[in-house]
Image (cartoon, rainbow, N blue to C red):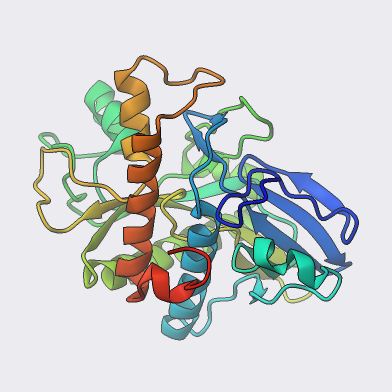
Length: 314
């Protein structure tokens, strides 16, 4: 764990809370039988590889963007339930650790999570473009001829679920609706799809007014077994889980300016390093990546980063 409050690569709360899961970016701790602490580090992954070079403040930016979305979405969609409880740290964490973990940790409901990623795509990009060029389909959905990269889908956003990679090095696999229903059950498959599309449409309209196109994003959902409700969980609509493009300068058929990991992916690809372990990212690439994440935060929330953490993150 770094002593710099702006950078956290590994968490260490096991003297206060039991660690129950260590992910690529997040670590999960048990607070009680029904609540968890999600702590987001500054680790960054690209092409399913966690890079050794952290992005300063990234964990806080992702956490605060997610919590902003939880507020926006539940206000706009009153029936939507999320796992978010509070940004406050639990009393088990001593005050000496608060500067490190505040605003990069959230308390959430502990729920069983459906074993698919609910991906919604509003624009032709990434693996959707690769698939479309190959056979005119995206995750089994036949699309009209003549579509171009960066183009919005003519009939609106599409739902393209995938499997969830369980371990480092494993890859998510795009699947069709039928396979998704086999994994989560017919009872929940339609509800997950409907919710994912509704949340995406709401978020896309909100972001567009603030100068950001949400080209695609992934959601995860859990189940409240007491009420049988599908619940929005995990991070939501962040630069790690979404493809964010700038409205200004956007043009179909060109590479839009992004506020996500695409800049880092492009650097890795250009250097022939995509998918390789142990790659140290140059300082200039780190600074530009952090700057893009900060700009996404500021555009979406309407707040300057320096105003959020004036004593730590200026």
